[in-house]
Length: 524
Image (cartoon, rainbow, N blue to C red; front, side, top):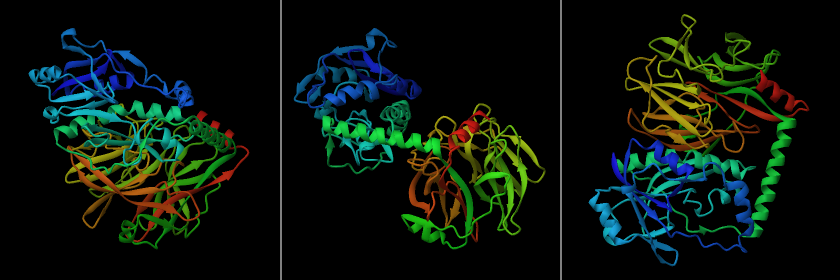
């Protein structure tokens, strides 16, 4: 554990900050509380009047609520007044001496504004949050300009402070969804998940691991009244569009196969476009096909959505005869994402059953299912098995945050577990590519992961990600290629074989009863 000091203002912190400390309590030993009693924010009420007004309705939430920091012993508290040099505050030198006496190796800044650090203490790391991706948006306010400029996500970092604005080393970086119709929902999600970043920052600090991030030149400030007006009009327009879509439009999914591809060319392209070479006729029993996985060159497993009971079924589709066979179905239970793989000559399907069950493996050899140990309390979204260097891995999402958080679990004992949490979970936090979209690929001695783009429109494209490191302690990846479908939205799931690629896609179709179908799907 790291001996830690905490900077706060007037004995108060925000709820999200308290959650951060709780989530990392096994990594830090808070020995000192540096309680600044004279921090103030100079406000330009006339220039930024509308921003302060929307602050009341959009920014304040249970996560930004101030709470008294009482979970401490009084002798750990050092009250002080900072000195000011324009916008910069300084901590008195005698307090730095107290830090040295108490063997403090880390300071977490949850209070004060810009801090001027004495030269002799620059090696003592002071880490601080910035709710924004400094490669695009330096300054403030959090999340505002991301919505204003139609960004796909909003970044958040934890960095080591120095005496230049946003020029410190970045220890952790995550991206969260931008809800273009709701500033409030966007910020709630950002603050709720900030605890992930503090923990990863502390882990990376221990490993001396830093994230290289090119910082933007422009520093944003609070928006003018005119800018806020444009912002509110944009939110209203987006919200109206969302309502209209929910009432009158729905996605019509299908899948296709293409033999015209070269994986090397795909990996060398920043944006690769597939074409739908062959339209698959959907059986009258089903409303759509999705989530296709190759079994072999002639058969695929996929989800078929039953029109009568509004439940997904797993079917085996014969590409030659254009016939199908039910593999897993239940009138009251939903199956999807039939992740297929072989291990020791046994054929398995690891389906998504998150709406009603923890994950299980279904053996095609004996038509039996067996639950995986270690997931008794976890229902997983789009679980995907990967066997590498004698370790069984499962990539998956969780029901509450599957669109932007990806988790990794591992077992060294058996394919059936017990599975353990990877220490860096969630290993990916980004709506751009977190959710699984197909099998893990091994190609030319490299490993690639397919991740869904869940930003603006659900299921509208995937990203190929190069897995640089995967083991029980570490994980890292980087985005390589974006993949879309010409003339359609998608893919949502994509899988390769030696001679082809299979993927799903959709079109938004007008339907007077779209709202009714959505209600039925949720109620059934």
